[in-house]
Image (cartoon, rainbow, N blue to C red):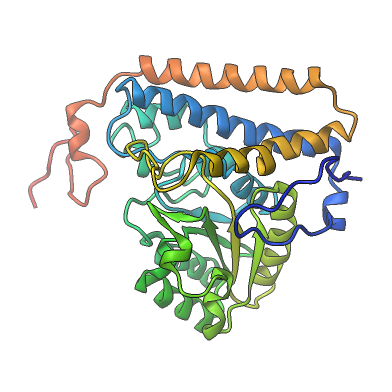
Length: 355
């Protein structure tokens, strides 16, 4: 049985009420809890290293870190089933790792190397893995949402028992294409779970200044899409809500919206100094709601020792170090890669074919 955390935490800005641990989470074995903890820690350490490499000039372009939001994607993936598809926005490194994509390939892509998932051509915001059912990584705000609906349509058309997990941010929910997607998903009762990662800020604008109405989970009510607010800083609460929502989609009832109330510790991207919020606000969220700290308390109540937790941290650091070394030693893409993965026929030698 999963024990509650020993310390009471104050509610952060705009956080939903803390629900009691669901019975569905009580069925998790200690080994599962440890694995969830390790998944979140891998994302945290990977992103910290990515931030360092960006500062050293080894990662170019935009780079959006997921530090603070780890519980969202880990909880969702622990509720998903094989064959479920995932699509998200540009803050995507954590989603790739949670989907099982290798840290080596993700880090190599961030540094623009041939060993990356897009062979060094996509960078931070554009990498994919058909094997892991991960369809991006998209740089245009909200553009991944209609793609997610398309993936959900594919599942239904092929009579597959799967759901598309479509992630978007609190800024993207005001995009017109999002509501067109809501309408189509509801009209055709598509198995699409829309996950709104409400980290309180759309770039530098607080959601309270940009969104009319405070419950983003209700944005689908006009289309008959049910929604729910979830504490996105609690991985067990995320998993519990995700299981319920995914069952709704999988059983043929159409789409569902989960609004994850979460928080990012860093700026919108690495070039954002985040001067629109106070250091006290960020520190309070770290101290009172950090998802990894909360899970650490759960594990300690399961009689997991500090030594065991330190061992997991050491293993994760080794994985990240190896990924960094792989990225730094992988060659840069060959010039011939300019002619691959585009809608242009090529001959056997990889050169443009005459049409």
